[in-house]
Image 1 (tube, helix red, strand yellow):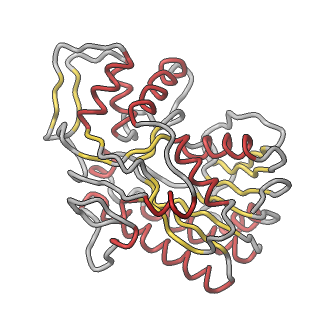
Image 2: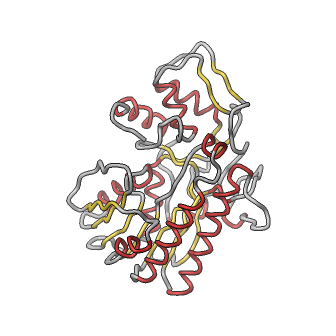
Length: 325
């Protein structure tokens, strides 16, 4: 789908992924129009082709109004948080994420939105010591304990995506996201994921340097600019009518590696690094096979994980005095 002269609905427009998606769309399609939906965070990208609309996607009426007149959509609104939130309030992300996504899919169907990209999550997979492909999802096995609630939520929403595709022939592409990081991430200690938390501590020159979890914990992580490129590739690939793609770096990144890179690029050398294995963490190993996205979408990451951490650290040094999230 050529997105020039088309209106793209984007939920979660002021978030980590949403802001990067806006930038990619504007760079690739000079005549695209973006209906950028946000809830609490004040918009910060000013462009004549971006229409920011504040809306509560928990309202069914608001969903219909926001979807009206859009040609395609990216559903990237989500209530998210790191290990601390999952440990203290595991229920906090459930209802809102079910309601927002279910009602927006309904609105897209009734408003004849032709194509939708749903940003899902790799948290839906069961625990595994191997690299996981899309077909490895086993609905007879639960997600890991820490992701049990949200894992089943995204499994359910993926089934709703298939329902709406088969019911009204809406084209839907599902992006199973690895841990996304980058500028405009959540750096608040109460809500942050592990990478922005580590970067924040490095920039603040914490000593001793405390890290939640073990240094050998493995994650698949992806820089937000690369993730946005994958989402735009899904929007404009007419050959894919309904499919699911893992979107990650496909590199096994350790917590210890992230710590080393964050300290290096923040130019901080603490006298002691303390890995707190008694603090909340999720699972020991997660790695994604992203071959399918490369072969069918022609997409692959352009940043190494270290390069992404360098960019994010430099951004945080420059912007920490105003960015509040």
